[in-house]
Image 1 (tube, helix red, strand yellow):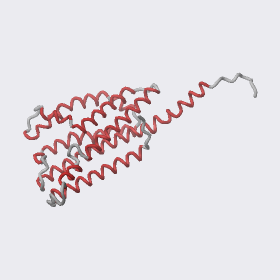
Image 2: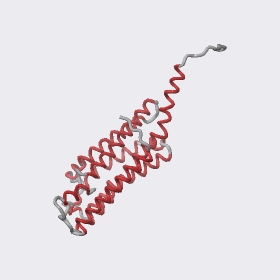
Image 3: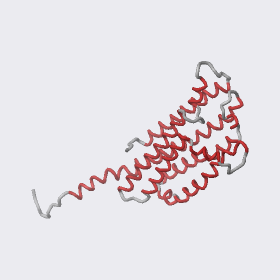
Image 4: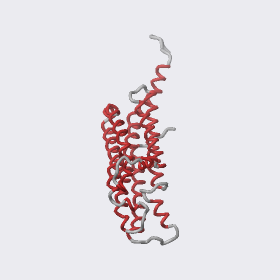
Length: 253
């Protein structure tokens, strides 16, 4: 599977989707919690949850999982091109593709929540943060092992990758910690202002994650567009020149 989408257009589409999802999520939550309008029509509560960015098995979750899968597809495409060209770091691109495919599955199935059942840290209702303690060494090891790969990237792509990763990790880890102490006891989606503090914290967390993922996808698409596509176009021409029969010196038509 190959994708050929202009990087700038792709980023605009992703950012518009993020803005729309968060506008719908906050809008419904403000009506439900802030205004206390719990049941203006049948199944309104279900509609609120369907657009709420911190719930599973709903539209924002499907979007986030899809974007991570898109990143995996683009990374795999870059890896294939790098391998065909005999370039360095083809394996690094491929491993990143596998990592993002696993992140996509985790986003959809919430596999990391299993770590919440392992009491690595004892913080009362915030003990579910144990999954962060388990994941931190893996993230650190991956970051260290990719230092040379990162330094070899073009400047703009490198900055986008770093910023995207920082936003994603800060949203997934840093704001997760903030959310744990800002009303996660209302995770049952209790109506009223008691839940709004956590809703706002969780919304900001998801905004950072989504924006970080979008920037990373843009970085990979930009690399594919600016640094691999010209080589892919030039390769057939070079092959044709090499395959053309040599014209003997001094020959005339």
